[in-house]
Image 1 (cartoon, one colour):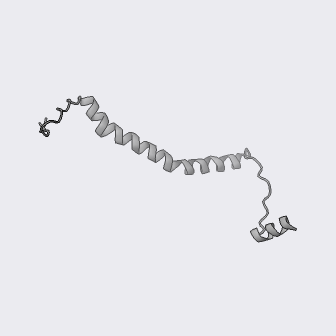
Image 2 (cartoon, rainbow, N blue to C red):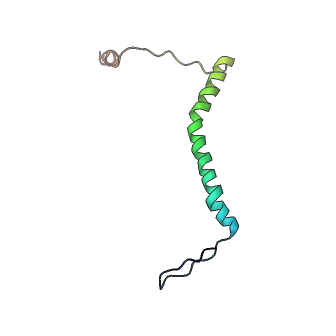
Image 3 (cartoon, rainbow, N blue to C red):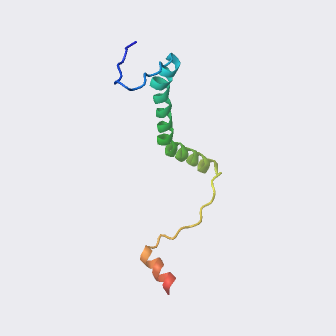
Length: 79
């Protein structure tokens, strides 16, 4: 173990157990990476599940959406 010197007047650091060191250096970054991976893969997984539901006929029928330009809709609403 490396002995660290502290500045005069500063408290001595408490020794860290091997389990805490492993958790901090290995398990912590792995857990963080898993969270980031889950966030990155979520849209792809949702798209795949949606495609499977559409293929099985289990999707919700969406209402028909007018493809009129926004200006035309505004003119319809104001007239």
